Image (tube, rainbow, N blue to C red):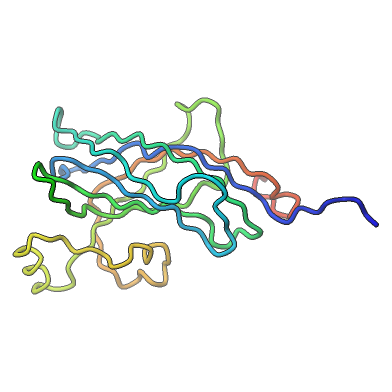
Length: 198
């Protein structure tokens, strides 16, 4: 009997942060915060780290209207999987909040977790820029209703953005940019026949 143990899965460790958000024309709200969720396919198991998270409320009112809004929200997670299908993605919902505590959606951003790349010097890690996409009303009547009710259009399920086939008919506009810094450590992939570092 062969005493060798065959690897049955590989692991993916992610560490980084949601760094900041930038709105070229200003966020049109006093404070900004983000809700994030890690979403992966059925073959992926989240072993450690939170699947959901919430940043603090931040503002750029002390500077120019289009200055970066800094979050520096740490993200750490470890996955294991038998297949790269359904590679994990980070889905971020960006909200604004006025002085009275009223929340409004500013947009959504998404990014696939990096395939590889880990550097000891955090300052030299490459930045990932994800566009913040804001849903648009499908017609003038819906636009007028949204204006009268002072409620921005929202997606019923933001995860529809993760599937390119499902989000084809969505009407979205770019509202800003979300800046992220993520690094990856992968183990056991080559034993399963995956070689992505070539």
